[in-house]
Image (tube, rainbow over all chains, first blue to last red; front, side, top):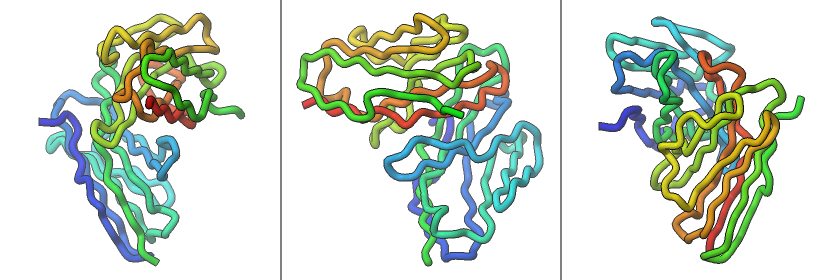
Length: 113
Length: 114
């Protein structure tokens, strides 16, 4: 079982719709969770971080964390063609661990005009 | 503010040659990470430094790979000798603290080994 799993997609949504990206992780004691956006040919860009159960909103983006289910998601409201990218979920173990971020393989999102 | 700086942006070399990739982290960041990204394996952590000291190099694939961080503002990743399977995009990232670990990535170096 992969440590961090994402559906590879591609996920296609029409412009203006809500895009829902999902991520599950295997290490129950994971503490910090991140979503990165990566445009083709570019580097990953941090867009959201979440540390506590529940929802965290930032503009059109909402991150949701459920530690009991070992599940983290990213919702993008009013999707725009400029949101078309690969979204990487990253998970960090508890403080003090020698291990650092583990990335999922990414979900490719296409927003259709 | 300058972000993470990497050089070169593109490198094409022949099998057996030595390759050196360079990274300048964001000023004030005390952790530095080297990643490799391929279609097959995704984004993999190779090694990371904390306060210029290598903490975990378990991701370094072989002895052909080595990394150094002689000071807080510079790091290198060296491959000697290079092989075609080393072809990938190599990213450097830095962060301010160990706990929060919000990492910021450089633009990457696209390496092609012929």
